[in-house]
Length: 231
Image (cartoon, rainbow, N blue to C red; front, side):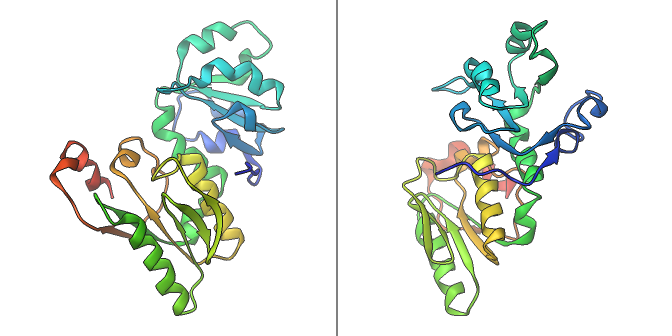
């Protein structure tokens, strides 16, 4: 899915309360979009470089700047040291809990879109996809515009906009972007799947949840079961 820009926002607002750095250092820096993927960076974007299991975003920081990024947040002190003294030095910041705070940062950039939706977060071992689809269908029957986000597809008011997600719960940036798009489309409600891994990896942090639904719970999920209490 093509990455779209959000409304412009100031970096100091996005990072308020998340760093001990003087917010004044970022006061006049406008952020027009955000991405974890250097290939999808646009002019004025914030690049978030995370150390992942399969890919390390810190290897693509310089590429992101070449493509138009105006600032980089990283979870790697080594990346900051590597660029120290370069022309990029003032535009990179180490944030220890970047992965944990990514949902909050993204939500702020997209103007807290979940607060403008009635949200249904569906979790459990099985039945999540069926449940979010049923919620959306029932809502539409009573003339509510309801979208859903599932493992199979993302739908805005009965219209599929994305298929075959690799993740039950999208990454924090994608999740907030979907909410943002739904608000722009005048969607009133959204039902979305929340996996235990999604909770563990803070993908729904920064999301306002009105109703949490537990479908069914099997013992094989006990390893991550305590994460459900976050809802």
